[in-house]
Image (cartoon, rainbow, N blue to C red; front, side):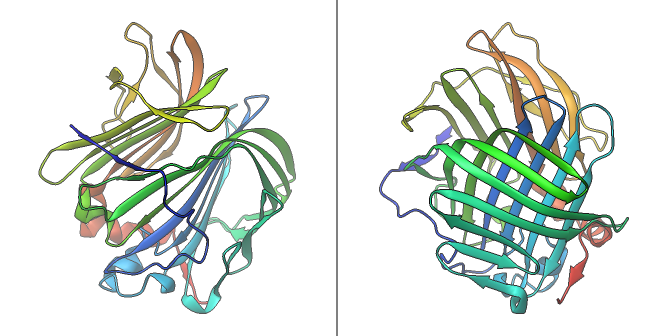
Length: 320
């Protein structure tokens, strides 16, 4: 088992951090669950979109020409949510250290608050997602991790505990809840360094737990199991018990982490694709019942030509 390398002194990645290399990328990830437990949100801003078929078909030539803002609204009561991810070219990209604009959507750091203005269209049904999301960090960390032995892929849990406020006009929706914010950067396509990965985060009463397990092409495994205190201290934990979950509809094998004798169940499958599954889980950690945000990625599936050919139906490309 390879433990991810911890780097406490790296400069905090800004929106204008250089992104280069053959297949380089950067993304900024937010998730949140409303206080009433009914609504969920995931938002990812990509430069060099790692899932883009267009980027792969270009030979991983120019990450700045393959940008997207992915926004997903979930309902835990059975109602339908919304999902949008339109890829855009370099002419639609503008960025400084504190501001990132991709097409009509924008992320801005100001006075310690991340404000996201969204105006995206879903596909294949062209419903709109428009409004404002604000993230208020409760905990900021200095930790950064190399996910691979060569140091080509880095992960930083910037604000693993945060409050999120959502106010949308399309659909008409407002709520607030606990959230999470991190960033990943790399200098090559994900599929060159990994075949699978499993990630999860859970808010506990006094701290937060983050779990990250990957499998490399030589079948070695890498991991980080972390505790983040309210003061922002990041502590590595002993490798925690994991249990297999039911396979997704597309046969993605999932695993997650919990107390040894605790039951674990899927509250809701949020995304279920041939290569990726995102889920909300119910389990116990340190005797405390938690809701865990969880994702599994199968990169061997993603690189298959037939899978890439399916993606434009959900991920169209626009030049405006």
